[in-house]
Amino acid sequence: MKLKKDLILRQIAGQYMVMPVGRLSQICQLLHISSSAAFIWKVMEKGEFTEDSLVEEALKEYTDVTDEVLRRDIRKFIQLLDDNYMLDSGKPEPIMGMTKIRMTEKEQKRL
Image (cartoon, rainbow, N blue to C red; front, side, top):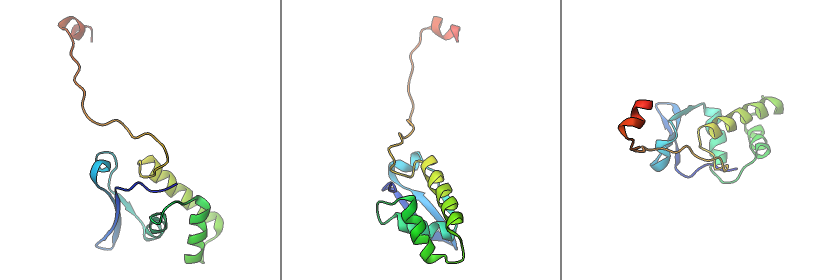
């Protein structure tokens, strides 16, 4: 897995936020994350990652938490990112925009 390119992590007034830019700003929302999620994000920014590689890096940083707890939290974070189209996982993005449909008066009355 890897993160999509048009995402920026920013710390503003002590809060971490993932901000979509460019085309992604039409699909993704601004995402507020914790400092520990920001640590995981920074690991993800380095390139390809797996759940296991993220857990391994997090265990080096957070020694007071178990493997199971980290794995559960990282799995939830990955799912949150995927649900918000922030992972380059092959999941199709929603179609955005407007479509004009021309209908006759007869067709309109049937609606």
